[in-house]
Length: 434
Ligand code: GLY
Ligand code: MN
Ligand code: MN
Image 1: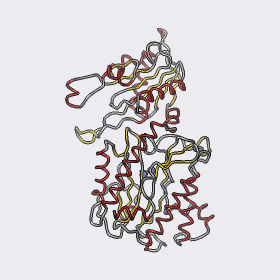
Image 2: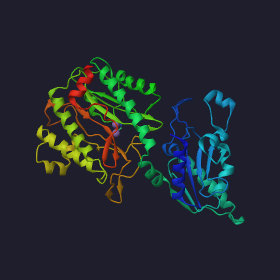
Image 3: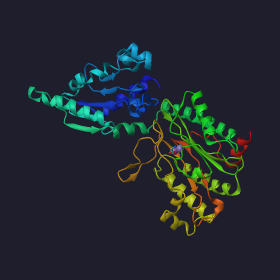
Image 4: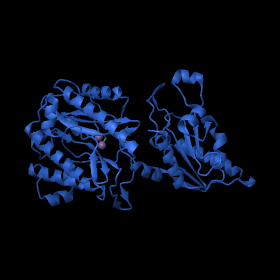
C-alpha cells in the first residue's frame, strides 16, 4: 500500500471531523504470551488503516487546520541498545520521512505535549473504550487543561466516538485494498489445495494445519485467525481449533483457514473427504450446502440488502433438509419457525477486510444495509449434524459441512475473490486424486 493512500484516508477523516476538532488513534501494544515472551505483534486495524505504521506504542493525532502540521505521530524514540535487542524503530525522523507525518514526538513526551494540542479544540474524536488505559490518559490530559482554565485555557467539551466514521470508510474497499485481498485469497487458495492433496487417513489434523503454516510463511503472510481443521465430529464444532485428532477413513475434514497480507484478510472454508471420495450421505448434505452458497452468492449485487444472501441460504438449506427428510413439515413454516437453526446455527457471512469479521454497520436504522460496490463479504452457509442427534437417522451423524468464499460487490454484481479454489464435488475429488 503506498503512502498516498494513507494520506487520502487521513484527509478524508479530517474533513469529516472538521476544523476545531482533534482526532486521536492509539496503536496496539505488545501483549504478553507468557512470562517474558510476547505474542507476535499485530497492529490495531484502525491505526494501521490510517497510518501504515506497524510499531507498538504510537499515537496518531490529527488536528485539521493546524498551522504547524495537521498530522502528528507520536512514536518510540530511536534507541540503539533497544533496537539491538528488539528490532528497528522508525523514530521521529522516520515517522516524518517514511510515514508522511508533519511532525513527530517521542511517545514518552506525550504527557507534556498532548494537553497543548487538546487545548482550544472543541471536539475530541477517539475510539472510546477500545483501550481503557488510553481513555484514562485522555481524561488526565483534559484535567490538566481544566486546572488551567482560570488562566484562560479552553477545555474540549464534546467527546465523539470515531468508530462510525472510520468504520464506514473501511467498509468501501479501494483498488489497492482489493489487490491485497486478492493476493491473500490466492495464497490461501494454494494452501487449501496443498491440504486437499496432502490429506490421507492416519494423518493428524495438525499435520494438515502445517500445510497452511508453510504456504503462508513462504509468502510472508500470516494467519488471519486461528485455523479450524476439524475431522469427523470435530467438523460440527464451529470454533474447533485444537486441531489434534487423527483423520479417519470415511470422515469429512472441515478446514476454515485464511491468511492476511499487509493486514488484509481472506477467509475460506472447504470440506472434503479424508479418503478422497465423498460417501453418498456426505454428498447429499454437501450438495445442499453448495446450492445454498450458490443461491446466496447470486444475491450479492448492488441494491440488494445485507440479509438477502442469508435469506436465500436459509431457504435452500431448509428445502434440502426437508427433501432429505431430516426436517419434517412445510417449507414456509420451517423457515418461519427457524427449524434450520438446529443444523445451521450461524449467519451466512460477515464483512471482510483488515479484520476477518470486519467493521461496518449491517443495518442503517432498523433496515438492513444495501450492498454497494467495493464492499467485501464472506458467503459461508453450512450444515452441522452432530453425533447422537435425536430424531435424525444415524447415517447423517457427524457430518459437518461449511463452504466459504470471499465475495466483492461490483458495479454490476459480484466477483468471487476465492473462485480459484474448487468447491464442486467432482472437482474437489479430482484435485485430491492429483
Ligand atoms: N473464520 C471465521 C469465520 O468464518 O467467520
Ligand atoms: Mn467467515
Ligand atoms: Mn471462516
